[in-house]
Image 1 (spheres, protein in one colour):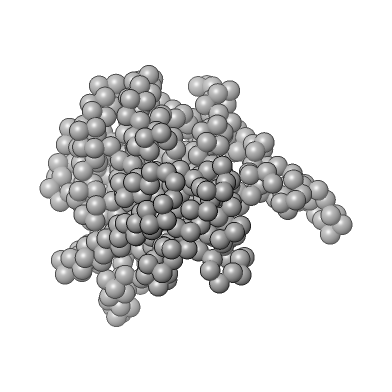
Image 2 (spheres, protein in one colour):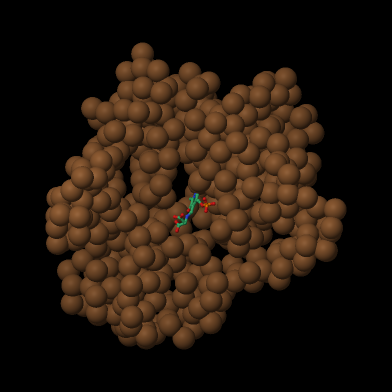
Length: 474
Ligand code: KET
C-alpha cells in the first residue's frame, strides 16, 4: 500500500518530501506575491501534493465517483489520508485485539494505561465551578490577561528582564498549534524575511502550519541517525548559510520526535550564531517540565535568548505539562526591544486573531491561571509533573532492560539517553508495520514511540515486538 495513503510517513520520507511540501525547491514564493496569494498557492500545493492525494483504491483513498456521489457538487473531492500522528489513534481504535497498544500520539497515560486528569486540575476546576460570580462572556481577542501574564512568567522566569521592561506581548492562543499558526501569520504580514528553517526531523505539523501561514519552509540538519544524537556540525553549517533575518524554529526542550536536545554549551553556540547572523529565533515550547521534570531547567534555552536583550518568539502549550490536551490552551509571546514596539505588535496580533477565531476559549485558560496564581496549587502541580516525567524515565529503563534481557541485536542505549515523551527508536517503516500487523502495537511510521503510553505491564509485549521486528524484518 502506498505509505502516504496509509498516513504513514517516515522521517526519511519527510526529509525527501520537504522539497515537495515545504517550499524548499521550486515552490518558494516570489517575493512580489501578496500574503494571501502565497497562502492560497501554498494551500493548493498542499492539497494536490502527489504523495498526499493519491488515488489507490486498496487503501480506500479514491477520487472515483460512486453511484451515490452522482449529483453532488463535491463528488470530485478526493479522500485525504489520515494525519501521520493522529491517524495512528484512528487505526488503533479500529483494532479489536485485547493486546493492542497505542504508542502513537504524545499523550500521557497512567500505569493502568488510562488518560490522566491531574489532581491539581480537578481542584482548580472545582474552584471555578464554586465561584458563582464567574460568567461565560467573551474573552478579549488576546485572551485572559492574567493567564497571559502568568504564562510569560512561567516560560521567561518571574524576574525576566523582558517582563520587567514590559517589552513582551503575550496572547492566549489555541494550544501550541494555534500559537505557532498565529505567530506564523504575524510574521508573514509584518516581518521582512519569509523563510523559516525547521529541523530535520521535526514535529510533522510544523511544515504544514508554517506553509499555510504563508511562510516558506526550509530545513536545517538536526539529527544524526548513525550516532542517534545531535548533528551539531550539520546544524551549524545549515544555519550559517541561512539568509540574514531568516526565522529559525527551535524546540525549547524535549525535541519531538528525536528526544535529543543540544547541551547548554551547544545552545550558547547556537545563540551566538543566531544573533551574529541576525536570524530570528521562534521557540516551540510544548514540553516544559517534561524533559527534566523541572520547569525552570526546561526553559533555559529560551531564557538565554531573552537575557541577551534580543528579540524572539515563543509558542507555549499547556497540553502536555498540565494534561489539558483537549482544552486547547496555549500562549504566543513576542519579545521585542521596547515596550512601545511590543504594544504595536500586540495590536497587530489582534488583527490576525479576530478574523481567525475571534477570541479564545475561557475554561482552559482559567484553569491554568488558577494553578499558576496560587502557591499551593503551583507546588502541587510541579510534584505531579515531576511524577509524570519520572514515570516516563522509569519506562525508558524498563524497556532498555527488557531488550538487554532478550539480547535484542543492536545498541539500544539511546532509549535511556533520549529525553521527553518520545523515543526515536531507529526502527524503519517496514519494522513498524510488522509490529502493528503482528503485535497490534501502534506508533508513527518514523519509528517514534510515545514512552508515556507504555506501562510496566506492557513493556514486555513491546520488547517482544521490537525483538521480533529487528530479528525478522530488514
Ligand atoms: N509542538 C510540538 C513539538 C508538539 O509535539 C506538539 C504536539 C505541538 C506543538 C502541539 O500541541 P498542542 O496540542 O497544539 O498544544 N504533539 C503531539 C500531538 C499532536 O501531534 O498533535 C504529538 O507529536 O504526538
